[in-house]
Image (cartoon, rainbow, N blue to C red; front, top):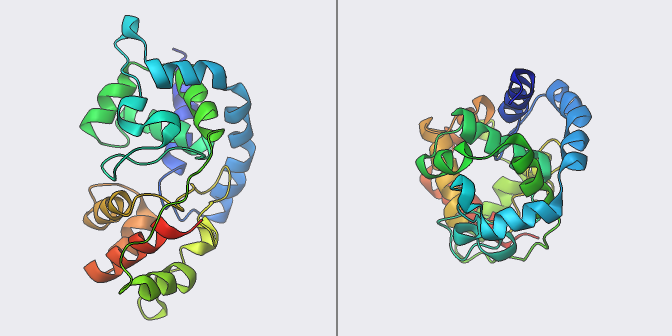
Length: 225
């Protein structure tokens, strides 16, 4: 694997994180890199690897956890269908290099080449997104308020400012989050809050959320589309 490719991939991985609140300059830079990632991926090859894995390289099928077409069956594993290819690619690179820590995913990504990651990203980006459901009617208004308007008194910005009113995100800048399992979103926010998951902007934002606020916005996100 080319050292220059790894360096470039690391730069991309460091800019893409779930719920990232990036700087304007970073967004402008990503705008020049994202399309290159997307056009180099082969969705047909990505589908094969995602659905069947590759026993010759000890690669387990992604579908075994993330479900057919990126539709996982529980919040233990995130839904990946319709995710922006640059985000998928960046996170896989992060797992492979150790920039993002998760024992299972680091093991899975270790066997992947950069082209495998691009192929998987291209395949998942083409899969239809299925709507989720908010389950807690008692916190829906709180979650909506935080997502749409933030919390001014705590200097918490609106999630919609980067991820859009329906959670679709912004290609090459911010990931899709709408319809994601509430349990998964909550776990990621807790990780950001504790520092277990690294991202300067999200570490700062999540640290300002109470347990109630964190759960409310995660549940609200599950129901937007």
